[in-house]
Image 1 (cartoon, rainbow, N blue to C red):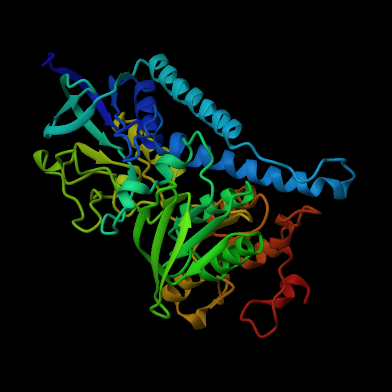
Image 2 (cartoon, helix red, strand yellow):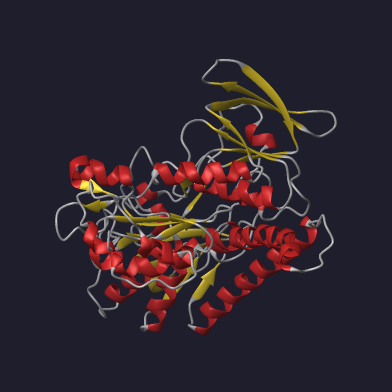
Length: 465
């Protein structure tokens, strides 16, 4: 083994949160190292520095979503006077190459940024030796010991495989693979009703592929269910097929290479069979904690979720070891929250600030064909917390009639939601939103043009009713 190397801060995980924390701490004068290693997916897919968001999440997802939207715009173009030959064809190979090259440029950019800030980067798989030391092993088996005064775990998560289903692991792929496919996935079955499932199904349909979503129960669990239903209704109108209340039981590979999927209809109890070119599992994610040997450092986890237990300061059960991002229990699985949490943690460790991350009213957007942006509580959460008699339109009935949540379905929902999130974050009331002048003609304008009935507990005079 090489000699032990000492650092002020050691970050395990080179994703959004870990890199933000490392760069901030280094800029504030700390000696910092980042340890990152990507275990290839069962399909053999691997990638570079940057974590899920850069490589197999937000960035390639948004690019493929945009590719699908462009297809729709081209089909609409003749109505605006453009002479565009129809039907338009999409080339998956060209798109995939462009997306993958862009991601690789981001990988390189992160390497350069770490070097510029004098952060030492180790491409090694880390596990704890004790509460101040980790052992890192390279792909070739070379071992290195690293120690640090403070350690931050930011290893994120990876997609789940339903290993109890015959053929799931052998023949299926996940979001770890879809963005790195060289060839079109063809006719695709997406299993799951998460935002990952619906986003992938949405852009696959938009790119002209025969796409089916198999859902066991409700779509977008945890999000506002009225909006979730509208998302899937729109997707169905655009050509995505839905198999509701169904669960797969077996995946078999046929002699021609196609995949034969057997599933059960939970409503009727009838078994069905269909053939697809690709089966994409999008049934949730699990934290990357299993290979870290957390017990060697005395770090406590939730036995059910396998996530690391943390306090408001992001500290684990070991005071000088922290966890941020998707690997931490009770945190939103969102890139921007991990980045901000990482920066604030670095500032606290460097004595520059005492601010802690506020996880309330965090906005987000699901990039389905018709985008769904939200901030604050869903209607179900608002009613559960305050009682149905105290809530109207996700606002409190009682003055000052605070807005508890805002939900928008439409083009560019993310851009719109980001603006309104500021108001919601700082306690906007229904009256204040209604007094905001809209920008015409925009989708955002509709939020401030809301009209409510006089039977509501909210003041109808605000909107001139």
